[in-house]
Image 1 (cartoon, rainbow, N blue to C red):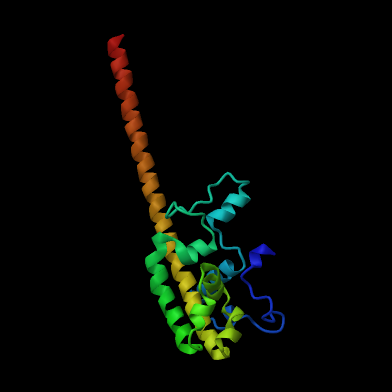
Image 2: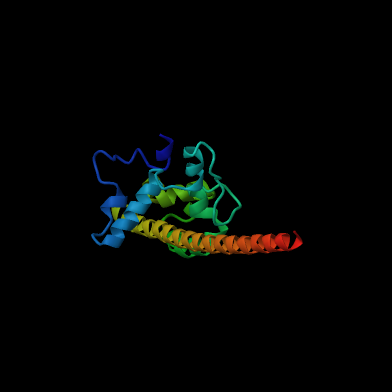
Length: 193
């Protein structure tokens, strides 16, 4: 059940389609955005903390990008310093939409920590009543949060690919340097004998 901790189970999932799917367009990119967000929402988006658990604690849970904190979904969506520019860029429209379309002071009252902000991003239906949102506003907010999740996911993957390429190049250089060093030692050793 812990993988569904961000899913609003009071939404009435059996009776209606959740906004994450109801608001999606029919383009491939919109479907990919929804799929990414659903994976984050249902706890099936793989982060280092999950890899750590599933590997019987042999994989390090620390974020591969910042090397500062355990990488869980809260870290990815709210605090990773390497993703901070993208977080700010894509979160600003979400905050602006909520503050402009809800009663004054609602933002400061409800979203004063990374857990509640993550909840808003992953399943805004948890707060629709407190925000005073009708279906249309909920669907607009859902579109903004879906875009946010996908953009962070995409940027994270591109950074990890660059890191992987850099690691491979570094390893290759180290192997070449080791072989060269080993060859020099062998030559020097042969000269001594």
